[in-house]
Amino acid sequence: MNPESLALDRVLSIPPYPPGRPIAAVAREFGLDPKKIVKLASNENPLGPSPRAQQAITAGAGGASLYPDFETFALREALSRQLGITPDRILSGAGSSDHIILVARAFLEPGTSALIPQYSFASYRGAIDSVGAGTIVVPARDFGIDVDRLLEAIDDSVRVIYVATPNNPTGTRLDRNSLQHLLARIPERIIVVLDEAYRDYLDPSDRPDTDHLPESRPNVIVLRTFSKIYGLAGLRVGYAIADPAIVRVLRRLQAPFSVGALAEAAATAAIGDVDFLHKTRSLNALERERVAGALGAAAIDYVPSHGNFILLRVGDGRSTFQSLLRRGIIVRPVDNYQLPAWIRVSIGLPAENDLFLSHLLEVVSSASNAVGI
Ligand SMILES: Cc1ncc(COP(=O)(O)O)c(C=O)c1O
Image 1 (cartoon, protein in one colour):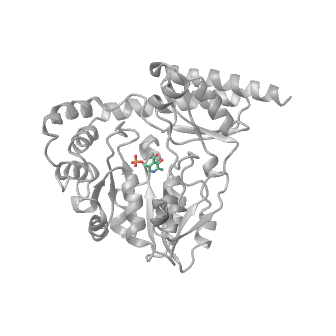
Image 2 (spheres, rainbow, N blue to C red; image 1 turned 90 degrees about the horizontal axis):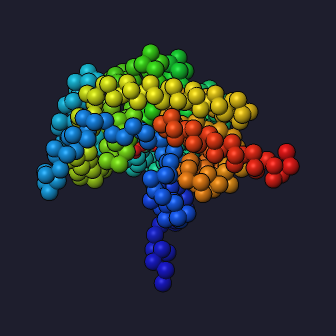
Image 3 (tube, rainbow, N blue to C red; image 1 turned 60 degrees about the horizontal axis):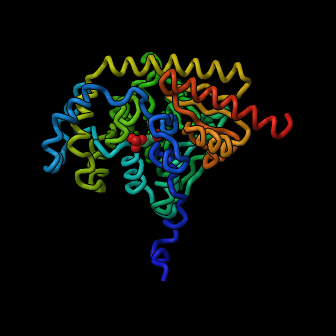
């Protein structure tokens, strides 16, 4: 008997999440020196974790034999002070991935559906499929969210809308007016997940005031993560801002102790590391502009990005990904987003970006020579 046949059909039909290839795996596969491999595949912080977070991890290591604080009191207190909201509006979790799934489990079931814009972050689809709900995909406009089409697509079956701004993999964002227009027209009976994983890469003046949004719109759940600008992707920690009643609902479903003690300590320390955040944002903005400029100069199409990555058109995304991999540069193919001609590259350190650009130009030009263009 194949034990797989014991699993639910809807589970077997979920495509596995395709993560960025880890450095160690690529080194093994291609016989490369791991120190020479550049990973620009998962939108991580090239500066590493905030130094304050690193100190907190070291200081907390001796306590790792104890279960973490179930309430993540210290983290929620620190966030409460930073955001000016009460701690009962904050739900910590094992990264935003945790919250994305919790929302699907709490508000969706077979016969209901969720609405997502085309080219949305892949985990939404996985979460929706896992609970047997339907997905309505709303076609994008210029790679971004078509707000009016999204509103038109709402029908009685829709219970949840997932929207990321800035969005992965496109890097597009909803400006303040479009967001207001959208939220004002979504019926209150629908949960809106506003995924702000890349919020901190926006210029502060471009960030909508979403900290307080659930106070006036209790159907909105705002997701934030420590995986990106805070440089803590390996620890798995994020949080949701929501109405206290929604926080209580989601908590019922969450695995106990989903945020580890070191993850909580590191995140709590990282919140106050303003210099590190500033340094990361400035480096990203400078390098993103430089990479975009080089792509433009080489006549390579790209989507202007508000995140720490760029989506660019290379002709054959999968083979470009493979060629770069052999050269020790890990990027992300995006054919799973129905973008077979494109790849996504994270913004790294200046030397990493230079290496990516020089290899990319070689790979792309040898590919176009091979097909005689
Ligand atoms: C738009 C978006 N949301 C959420 C996540 C999940 O991040 P994490 O689970 O590490 O917090 C990612 C990760 O790439 C993302 O791109």
